[in-house]
Amino acid sequence: MALNKKSVDDLNAKGKRVLVRCDFNVPLKEGKITDDTRIKAALPTINKLIGDGAKVILCSHLGKVKEGPNEKESLAPVAKALSEKLGKEVVFVGDYNVTGQAATDAVANMKDGDVVLLQNTRFRGKEETKPQEAGEAFAKELADLADDYVCDAFGSAHRAHASVAVVTKYITQKGGTNAVGYLMQKEIDFLGNAVENPVRPFVAILGGAKVADKLNVIDNLLEKADTLIIGGGMAFTFLKAKGYEIGKSLVDNEKIDYCKEMMAKADKLGKKLLLPVDTGIAKSFPDPIDGPVDVTYVDSDKIPADMEGLDIGPKTQELFANAAKEAKTVVWNGPMGVFENPTLAKGTIAVAKALAETDATTIIGGGDSAAACNQLGFADKMSHISTGGGASLEFLEGKELPGVYAADDK
Image (tube, rainbow, N blue to C red; front, top):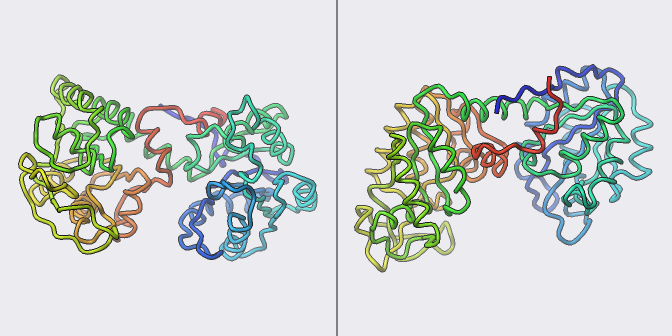
């Protein structure tokens, strides 16, 4: 997965119209942005293009847009936030058609260094369709607005959407360049190198609820990592595969044979596969999720039939932390327990703390583990926190991401 793609530094952007696909899929509450991390992450690429004298046309999706175009999922609040952060007006094209006459006119009126933001790409309804079916016309209209294209939306890079991957075809047809932005480049460098060319020992830590979500990741990382640590809800399927009583804990009975195969594979390859040796148990899942819960700790092979495992125990916290501290490269994806609950966050905190204190390159693979690091205050101690949950998982699986693959090679 050595990815030698053209970057925003390879563009001769002065006077050119450059379409930039960003990830402005920010959380909104009553029209206000509650977390602007993704907007901040896009600024280096946007500022570079402004500085080079490009006409910068930004596009992004926001939300799932299940009920068709609506003001609640409009990118208007993003335009406002961007104007403040860039210190210049970002012209917002609120047209639900995204690439209609209003967009054409706004782009025609641009001067070098100007910034235009198009409306939510998913308002077109064709954004997510398979390219061969319907996304083509929309992709071509996006390309018609620009001379060059920059993909800086790693969070969407695993989807072959019109504005992520299909647009590159039409930019190429008109002789333009398709590049990746600084954020994409950073993701490629950290995640790509961690998996393909890690400084060893390389430790991978996987958590989260379901084994099924991470089948290919477990398989791929067993071959690449020296030690694979499994915590969170997915650990109980492995524990059951070892013949342990797991009580009412989360289990995927269809994946028990798969877990047995993976443990056998680890033995065969001479890799360490670490599972919880003790577990925080309770009578039931907390309701509400952050409500009070009565937790006791037992060895992982002694979970009572009427109890359920909800976090890793203190012995496991020490076991996992020690493995992480011996590493030179660590990739972590998925929490160790129900981290949204203060009583059940101890395992996740212990792992985050161990990573914060190590000299290793520490890469957090987006999603819940990124949220946990941010919420628990460890984010600034990590080498890299990925902005894409699904995309980083597919990267760790060794898959080609359409949004990365579509950029021009150097």
